[in-house]
Length: 147
Image (tube, rainbow, N blue to C red; front, top):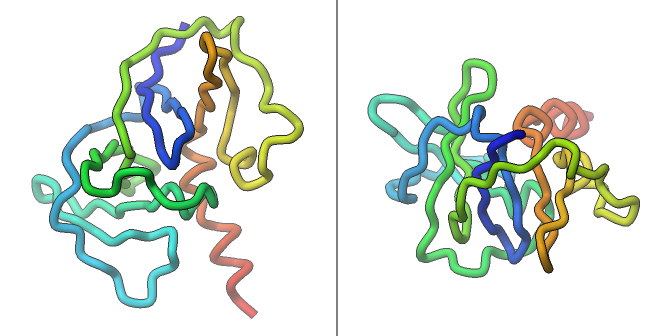
């Protein structure tokens, strides 16, 4: 069994393993970073820590968030960095059996597939389990931007 913090972003249902989640807090006081890519919404100060806010919809090419006014942020750590992922709606923590996970379908968008580790069939929905490390791996986008 693995516990997942669930959320929606741009109409899609996602889950992050709870072991990666450090905080959940309201989105406020984001400072835009000049010349940052579309994936970076800005930075904020969270109890003395600088948190890079990632625009998940842009990062995964999902389209615009459904309700940008009521966003919560899921705080995660990746390496020595702190990141915040604004979400349209925070869901429940679900305990899902590892035996019920399935590989991502072959027709899943390549960008989304690169960040997904598994999918779960939940009643009439599909939950896409994200891999935090792969989702926050900016190495490819940085190296491809250099001539």
